[in-house]
Structures are given as C-alpha cells and as structure tokens.
Image (cartoon, rainbow, N blue to C red; front, side, top):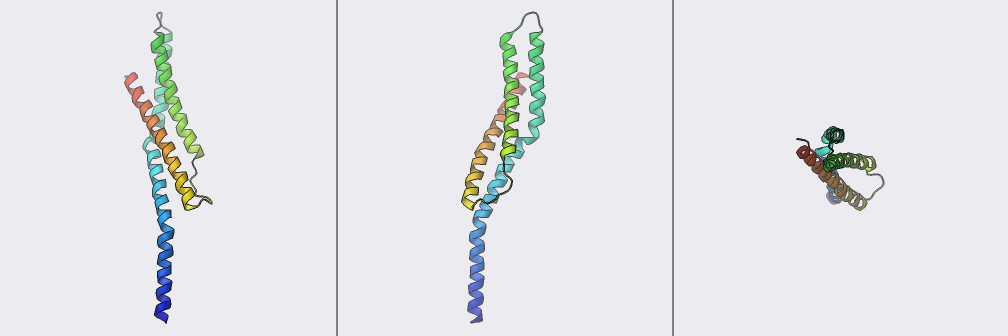
Length: 139
C-alpha cells in the first residue's frame, strides 16, 4: 500500500514537473535567443552615433565648398538618417521589451516572445545594414 501511494505521488510529481517545465523551458530558451539577438548589436550603438556624426560632418564640409555636390550631400545626410533611425529603433525596442513574464500564460508568453524575436531581428538587420553602408561610404 505504501509503495503504491509512494509510486503515485512520485509519478504525479514527475508528470507535473515535466509538463510544467516544458513550456517554461521552451520560453526561457526563446527569451535567451531574443536577448542574444539584442546582445549581438547592442555594443555597436556607439558606432552608430559616431558614424552618424561623421556623415553629417562630411555633408557640412561639402556644403561649405564653392561647388556643391548636392547629390553627395544628400547621400551623407541620408546615411546619417539611416544610422540615427537604427539607433532609435534599438532604443524603442528596449523601452517596450518586458523582461518579466507577468501574468501571461505559457502560450501568451510564447506569442509575446515570438513577436519580440521578429522585432529585434528587424532591428538587428537594420543596424548591421546601416553600419555596413556607413563604413563603405565613409572610407
């Protein structure tokens, strides 16, 4: 009798833990992946601002010349805009990102994190593209 009760308690405990942790561990893994995408480009935010300043300086230098190459001025201003936009996109994402799960169910949390993965991936791609374009243009 004791063995049967012990067996049932142990089986119930294992079943509850296995089912409860499955969603939780999947969401923890997904949250870690979201943060990893963020962490990949977060350290490059300083580069964004530095290159934005360089692009604006180049535009101002060209504007002060006797013969203004307005296409080149616009190119540098556009580059500066893209760099600033990528920087702002990261700030916006960080501001709205919820670090805590709150009262969300496992499914709601998964949907939230899936959406966050899409958003931060878009920010990641935008930042990398802006940095690549700036490095090419500001050689």
